[in-house]
Amino acid sequence: MSWRPRLVALDIDGTLLSVDGRVPRSVAAAVDAVVAAGVPVVLSTGRGWAGTRPVAEALRLPPGQHVSSNGAVRVTYPPLELLERVTFDPAGVVERVLAEHPEAILATEVVGRGFKVNRLFPDGELNGELIEVGLDELVAEPVTRIVVRDPNASEDDFIRLAHRLGLQGVSYFIGYTAWLDIAPDGVDKAYGLAGVCADLGVDAADVLAMGDGRNDIEMLGWAGRGVALGDAPDEVKDSADHVTDRFADDGTAKELLRWF
Image 1 (cartoon, helix red, strand yellow):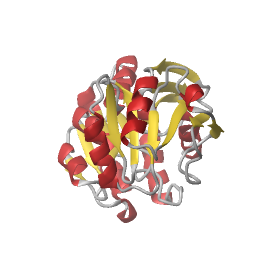
Image 2 (cartoon, one colour; image 1 turned 135 degrees about the vertical axis):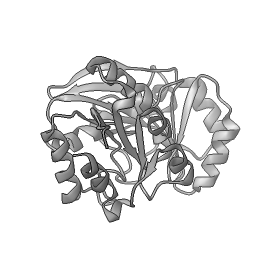
Image 3 (tube, helix red, strand yellow; image 1 turned 30 degrees about the vertical axis):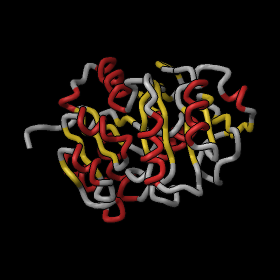
């Protein structure tokens, strides 16, 4: 127990928030204990900044850096300052996705505001303002991410879709449902957190990172202590140093209170 985190990186959905979008009291108290110890708490999420900011505010986090959009966006807040925004040209990716899966609903992020979409997503799945546009406008500018969704497909369908796409120059993250995030090549949560650590003078070996999704795999492998929630898919657990209890059984709070 001589090791102790110098920075705590936390995924949001399924790690801090329950399915109904609430932060359980036990989790909030555990995060408060980390903050009280003077250790930075960094939100590290696939959400865009528009969906990340309310969580930082709900947790009453002090001014500090956060990683959103699976590592493509890094900010300090409050006050808001955009530190890094990594983009790629979405045109070829969108063309390839629609050739393989014409039914796909697509979104590109408008940082700090919301998303442009070719059709509306199911209610509550994207945070921020949703701007319905044609495909030409959807791909008109470089973007931090593309979200691919089909409510009528399965998770396995999208795993197969990701393999079929075979795109070069981008990274893929598959969600629990028929959901695919496409990011700039080499950009993931570990990339974003490395930028945070460089600014703060913290080694990766001194980071405690927690998450439950496939987009957490790189982060959990990079951190000195990567912890998967008990709800996580097997490949996420395999990437972690430790597997805590399920979220509903206070897995997040138990891990944080182990150190703080």
